[in-house]
Structures are given as structure tokens and as C-alpha cells.
Image 1 (cartoon, rainbow, N blue to C red):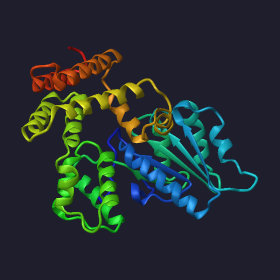
Image 2: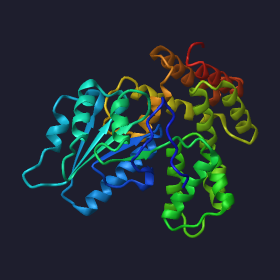
Image 3: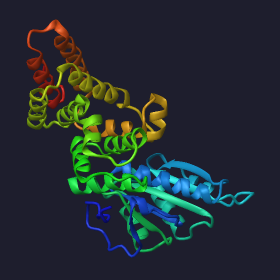
Image 4: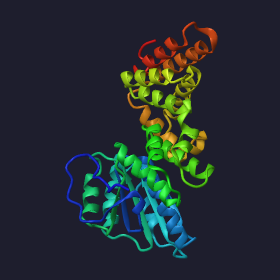
Length: 343
């Protein structure tokens, strides 16, 4: 596993507390989970919760949002309980924290409560810098868990290799390269692919195994095309589309991938609450909610509506209503890459 990287952002004080990778998370009075990779942050939080619950099944877990914080919440939850149960208080959305949370969090870390772990998730930016600097300088006796974005192939390969290593299963170097190449844009999807291979196969993961499960799956190529287009990268999306079609991909599942991504964005748009809360309401996984929120950046409600309409028209075209399925899909790519600004 690659060493943790410092998240990009404004100038920051030199940290005098331990800085750990996501999988090294451990209990401390205050834990700052920093960096933009939400999937790793969620993994770290879940790993900490499970470890604390294994130590003491009576663990109480409480969730707060720093952007919707009400005065007194943190102090109330951290106050000694009648039976003295250990507590884990998870604070989300610290990158947009309100003034009440900033003020009370600074007071709290000056004298943390016993038997309480406070985990603060900060995805990046300058909001709350005074609190971050105080934690990093050692106030509260905390640690920092750095969840940097895994943008390089080597970093993603290290992540995938660790998934198999932790499960005690070998994977051939060529198989690892093929798997990482198949899931280049979403860490959660890569993790899901690793878990599927672990669950459905025995022994060493070989290149043939990866080819069987993912090499011929149009969905992988389709979602890569859709992801690039939704992000506004028209040239990249068009190149991926033409490569996929040249290697035998069917336009129908291509359009289905676009439709699924756009519908998820429409469901998530305008919702409030943590990824877990919204996911339970909509029947999605938390990472799908977080991904849809990232995908929505730069989109308008009207543009999204036009793109969904275009996807429906393209679906009909590639199923026989149009004369040129390839042209229809290329037009969909253009409209989506333009974020629905033209039809």
C-alpha cells in the first residue's frame, strides 16, 4: 500500500501528530480523516467502528453533520453516560462546517472526554483551517488519517493488491494490471470487482480469470465512456466509445450505462444528508450517492433533464427506431459532454 499523501490545498502547518494511511486507522481521542477520496474515508470509518465494537460490544455510535450542527450536540454526546459505554462520534461534512461546530469543536479538543473517539471527516478546502491546524499541532492527542485520491495506476494497483493480500489470495501480476485497467475511473467499482473475484473464484486470480469476468464485459467500457462524458471530457469519451465499438461492443448496453448514471444523478440531485442517509432513502449504496454528487458538479437541472430525454431517444434509436445506431450514440456522448446544453 502506498504511503499516505498530503491532501492538496492551502498552506498548512507541519503536522506533529501521526499521519496514517486509511487501513492503518486506530483509536485516538480525536481522528482527523482528511483528503478527497470518500471511498477510502468510508472504509476507514467502518474499519474503526468494527474494531472498537470488537473491543466492546456496548459501543455507542453517533453521527453528526458539521454543516448542519446545532449548538451543544458534541458536548451532549460526549458527556459521561450512566453506564459508561464507550462512544464513537463521527462528524461528516467538516469541509463545510458551520461556525457553531467550529467553535465547539475547538473547545472540545482542548479537553477530550474519556472513552470517546471523535472522528472528523474533512474532504479538503480552507473551511475550518483553525480546527485542522490545532488538531495537527497535537491539541487533543489525535491522529490524522490521510485519504488521498488514488489517481495513478500504481496507487490503484497497490490498493487492489492489498484487497487480495488481506484476503490471503494470490493474484498474478498480469491479472492485476488487467483488472486495474478495466476500472480506471472509480475506486469503489474497482473494490467491488476485487470482492466479486474473491467471492466467486478459488485459488490464484489469473489473467484468464479476469478476462472471463471483465475482459468481455461491455459494461466496463460503457461506464468508462459514460463517466468521461458526464465529466465533460468529450474527446476522451468519443475515443473510448469508438474503441469499444471497434472491439465488438453493442450500442444498446452503452446507452443503458448512460441512462443508469443519469437517472442516479437525477435521484440524488437536491437531496440533503450524509451519503448513508440518502442511500437508505433511495435504495442505493453510499458510494453511489457520493459519486452522483460529484458527477452533478457543473450540471443544471434543465441540462440533466435534456440529457435524460436524449438518452431515452437514443435507446429507441439503437433498438431499431433509427437508421444509424453508432451516430445516435455519438450524438448522445456529445450532448452529455456538453451537460445537456444542446440537443
